Length: 81
Image 1 (cartoon, rainbow, N blue to C red):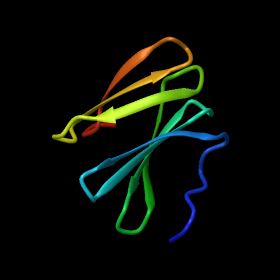
Image 2 (spheres, one colour; image 1 turned 90 degrees about the vertical axis):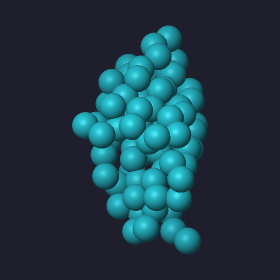
Image 3 (tube, rainbow, N blue to C red; image 1 turned 135 degrees about the vertical axis):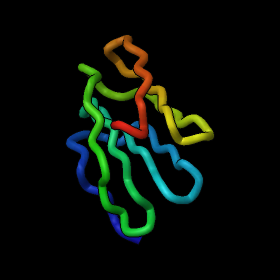
């Protein structure tokens, strides 16, 4: 087991999609998409102005919703990024 060190602040949420992907959110306002096979960071989703509070992935894996301290709720297209 290793460390995922791409955030510049405390990690505030972690969500697995099946066993293939993990999304991490942080106080740095970024959401990162990781491939669990080799822990490669596949995408960095930016759009919130303040730290991530929570996120969840739809069972299909096609969309994700996130909330942040900027009082915004965002819906992400996980296919296009």
